[in-house]
Image 1 (cartoon, one colour):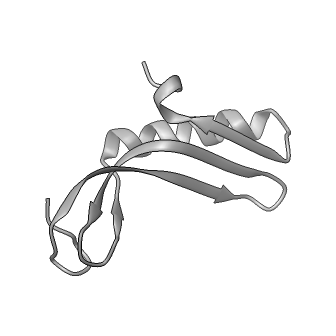
Image 2: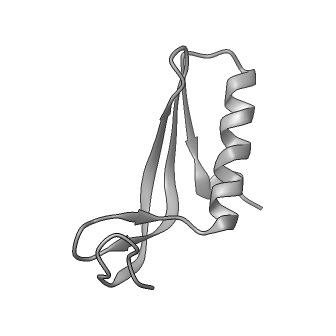
Length: 76
């Protein structure tokens, strides 16, 4: 896969996604992604983005200040 930012080669990897909503901080670990070897840009597939949105919506409903979620343990 090519990086849209710099055109470099993006390879499969994992990362942590951090979403700060002001009153809640949501951290999702072990998120599958593509990472550019040149500029380190992170690229998510549509399916991964949809799952991240579900995790964030669920975490908001818990009313916790910090939620830490392991992506690999929460995707069927």
